[in-house]
Each structure stands twice: as structure tokens, then as C-alpha cells.
Length: 176
Image (cartoon, rainbow, N blue to C red; front, side, top):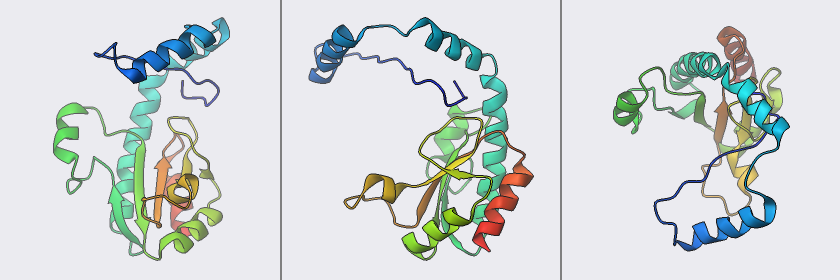
């Protein structure tokens, strides 16, 4: 819903006999098949501004990805809006109004450099979430634990609706 205060979704399958779907059916039966009225209202509230939030996050994420891609302390940026990204061609066909607010980047220096950078951020907060109005960052390998296959220097950034100049200033000072 964009305000980080409700969790909801839909589960759809083309294979209703699959074991995973059957397990979901059992959970639905025991936990209930629908949201409460308040949670539904929160979702409706968020849907009224989703087009504005997604557009702003997409614009900001594109600008940040482009700037990070040329920063000397960044080894790689993963964002489907960059022409050299492996998903660029398909994303260009599917995502006509922007490439979304999620990006990731790898810092030269691995986990130590990534964690040091996160600790220096002032506006962008470390947290595991996405799609909210606030920008959040996470060190994915820490979240996944010791057996993570994620590159140690990788940070995942969920871009919110803050001014892109403020977000860039925060990233730049943290990288300095």
C-alpha cells in the first residue's frame, strides 16, 4: 500500500493440484481467506496514490542508478533502466512508464565497505522492505546469513518519494 503499515497479496496458480497450492489451501482454511476491513481500507488508501508514488520512485531510481553506475567506488549497478543491464530489453518492452524503484549496487571492498556505507547514511534507513514512501537500504548478505550466495558488497535500495537531490546527497556523503 506504500505506507509500510499493511501486508497483503494474492496467490494465483494455473496448477491447483500442485503441492504448494494445496499447502496454501490448508493455510487459507485455518487462517481465513480474506483481509480484515481495516487492512482492506489501508490498501484502498494506498491504491489512490500508487501511480504517483511509482512514477516518483522510478524517476529517482533511474537518476540514482545512472549516477551510481559512474561512481568510482561502485563496481556494478543492477537496474533494468540502464542500457547495459541484462534485463533492459525486456524491461523496456514491459515497463513503459519507468523501471521501478528497486535497484542494487555492489561496492568495491565487499561487505566491510558496504556496511560502512550503510552506517553513514542519514536519510536512507537500513531496513528490509520495498515499495514504501521512504527510501530503505539493506545489505542482503547479512539478511540472508552465512550461506548467502549474494555478493558481499551488494546493497539493495528501495527508492521512496523523497527528493532525488536529497537521496543523492545522502548516498554521495556516505560513499565519500
